[in-house]
Amino acid sequence: MTDLRTPSRRLLLAAAFAAVSAPAFAASGKKEKKEGEGQALDPTYKLGSMSIPLIAGGRIVNYVFVAMTLKLASGAEVGSFKDQEPVLRDAIVRAAYKTPFTRTDTWKEVDGPRLTGFVLSQCNTLFGKGKVASVEIVKQIPRQQLMPPKAGAAKAGGGGPLNP
Image (cartoon, rainbow, N blue to C red; front, top):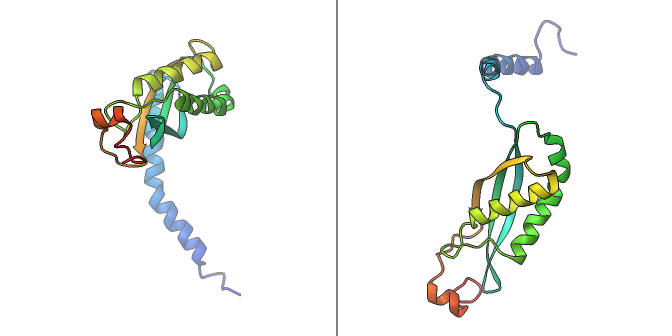
């Protein structure tokens, strides 16, 4: 049995953690009060990262992992977006295979304006018109760092990673 006068290792670790984290918690509390005094920020909904295929010449040449943020209109409830997110993600991936979001100059990024336009139109269908103000691509990470396709090779169907 341990002596009651000697502090346990758990108590010492808890005290050390509390001492180190106390300034961080105090600073975050002050920051929230300052933000709350000003104008309320527009609500946003972050879509999880999804893999978008890039297709050229009928073949998948790369995948790009894309993270997007939906900027909601004021008064829109975030809860309804959580329920419909799988349907939205499914529609995006299906469209990426049917009419690819591939840029003509690079295989490292998706065609941003086409993708955000499609997502916005799907949001209007799923959630109601005007619920989503805009769509922003936050991050794009290509699976492979491929060189941009050459104009002649892309037309001939050669030069891609699957068809050298």
